[in-house]
Length: 279
Image (cartoon, rainbow, N blue to C red; front, top):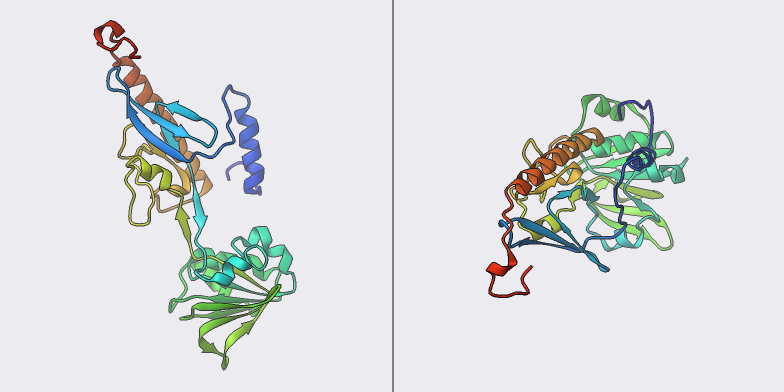
């Protein structure tokens, strides 16, 4: 991230939070479980109702920065060994496999980068891809191919994880060196991400085929007053700096949207309604 030679995501988050505290804002550490759109009586202004398990909030604008989650292996054993042998982040969990044997599952640039992260710790890394070739940046592919500690297995699918209290081996759907089983200590999964867009979909936000939120250059969705930024959107290049830029555009656009709508709100006296309890 610009301004730092090296910094972890969590450290940068803390710096963002410390900076934000210089201004007045309300922080709520709660999970939103549902969102509704409601047209208020005055001027046809749309209000968004956000509900948690404890309370609800009314908002004139919503910014979805809900990110994404790791796509997981469709194996029952993967759930059993999750975080106890099956991992999704080499930078986070790779230290536990120093001088051990691991496998990276995936064929894209993320899998290639995970492999390069692990090879500095593990004694051996298998890179297992279901495709006929790896996809990634040329410089990373070259490093992987030239490293003697890395074995690339193409056109193969992981079909079973073997072990009792810990992972002992994996099974793939084709022979490799005269066997379908590979003895190892851990697995790192890098088969992509799934955007956390279910909440946005509840209010009719348009998604693409990957379930990513579709935004324009102002980070606006197809619904006025609703914006999105970061890994949940349909931007091809997803990095922290691009997510920040999308959020900045979204906040500016949201401010313009709210200001414009406030200028056009018509205040109608309650006496004009037959129901004296209308508000």
